[in-house]
Length: 220
Image (cartoon, rainbow, N blue to C red; front, side, top):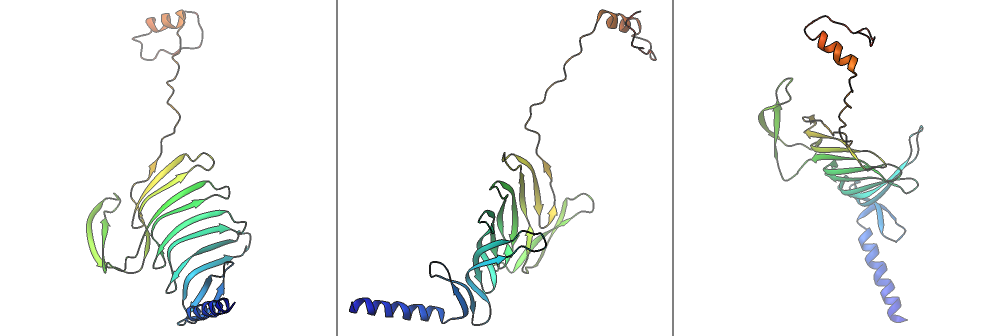
């Protein structure tokens, strides 16, 4: 009994010490600390955010990590009924890497590719595009600023079947190579029309006549 009391007091002391760094916080269903605000007023740690339905737009919930007030790492978005709607990746508050979006039935609808700001790279190389052609004519080195741009391959799928409908290639918000996926249906060669004896006779008689016109009659 004595050891139980000591352990409980020690656990309470550790919990109090760990949460003392926050201005405010909540406790999750498992007793973990969520939705914490640091002493300097920034969101930090694990967060669960709920956006209610508004003006016909369905509500949703998001969960992930905040680092110094910015989304960072893996985030998941759910419908208010618990359906997974999106899996997103962030760095310094901007989307980075592959993002996946799903229908309410759980079908993958599209995959997006984004490039986020890299704090370890103070400079960035951006392409210079020619007017009208969309081709890269030069590159320019600029100071890197926080950003999030479309960059890489985007894929669109047919809900229900998972069939890839089309892909797009992006470079820093420039659509450089839209690609439409060919139909999966095999090409069927048109059936050759069988000629009657009358049709062959008409073609033989009028082979060298430039303005000969058939009138639909089968007679000569």
